[in-house]
Length: 243
Ligand SMILES: [Zn+2]
Ligand SMILES: [Zn+2]
Image 1: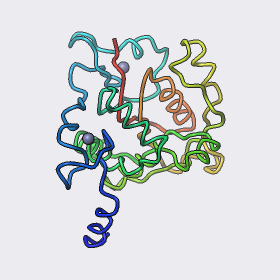
Image 2: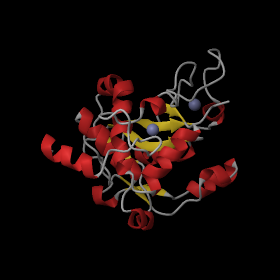
Image 3: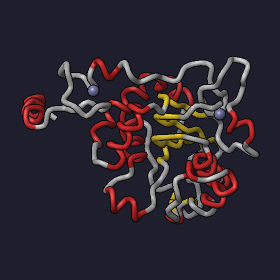
Image 4: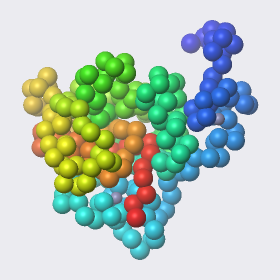
């Protein structure tokens, strides 16, 4: 976009902070300077598998990774704690058409993990799909918007049709572990459009906005691995605590 056009657009639709939704002060940033201090990056100690914060350096894996029967992904990259600020921001991004927040999300994600992700030499990103009825209702899949923004910055292709969501699942947090696996059973499959072939795609990263217990992520990774993809990583904006 030309800078003059951007200048005019900024006058009509001043950029909003991706965290509080107010017009940004100072200008030219993606979030307000006060809000920037409210988000907390995930730091050590963290789970060696999913990168969830854990209580101490001695704790190798979080509770969810430790008790999982089989983990189908190699490891995960998570950016922020799922704090109240992030819950509100992501709800706006996901349900209230604040797609422009993706610039802040993708920039922050690439700043933290860009080099590590490039070193993995991925074949592509795969967003966690939403059911088609939800897609029509919302007009977009927030995970795909995020994957495309990160993909553009890192020059990595996005395969949004590789995974298909077959049913609307109930929010996992309302269920116990038994109900969670029943809820996910058959929820995702590998796309028929790909003729059940991976077409040379061997190493991918699944992208989503939020990771809680990892049940959905592990299920998506299982579908991809069983379809013949060798290595599956994941990248998410927010993750819960693992203790
Ligand atoms: Zn703000
Ligand atoms: Zn973990």
